[in-house]
Image (cartoon, rainbow, N blue to C red; front, side, top):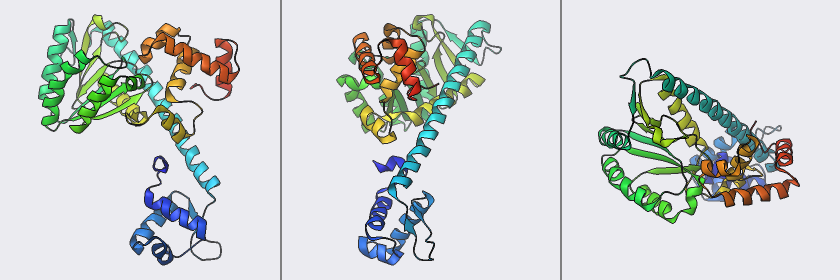
Length: 331
């Protein structure tokens, strides 16, 4: 668990010995742990970089910092970084939405950079072509929660072909897909082929990026039947790449639960609960929130009721006010 704070098994072992036995020379630490001095020194250097050990005022061996101070400081630093990543993601979402709106309004200035696909057959043909010709990576946002068995089976041949060629697959699903046995089975199969899957509470749109140089996005994220855009070498593609990379850093590997993720960062809320609160404060209805998070309306109402009870709120408005005062809402 401490790995998320940058503390590896060796560092943790040395830190525990120092907290128990007090400051000690590298040779003494190595002997206590049955290690080589080089291994002990490497762990000690890493602890110093994390400010978990400090030079002794008496000129002796480095002393361990009180864990209540040292570990709490590391956690606070990580929380600050997380909040900054969330701010950057929100800014990227705004930029992407603006660029896509401009593209839809103007049709783009260069037809070789922006291509419009009107029918599902055109979109599927383009996906197949780009998947078969890409050489390094496919990165994707996959909204909608748990995927149907039919959809997953249709995706299997392309995923097989690309992974067999050594193309890296990085997919980001919604957290709600964890409740889908078919999706979990597919992700396990994908992992055996080298694919990487993470999840987040919410995604801004469906997106496929090939070799970090070409992307397919919906013309209107709220209306899939409006068609899609193929972006090639545009400013919008740069923004989409930044959005994917930031979201990937914030996402959790599928094997980790939301509760574990919240515990690791010291948050009062799980990521899905925070997403529900954020959307509630944006004025969305339960139905709209359910669609965006890929879960049932019943689930949203259950989460909302639980949050209101924990906050002691008697209305949605009061829940929003109290959540903001606790720092539970991303402003």
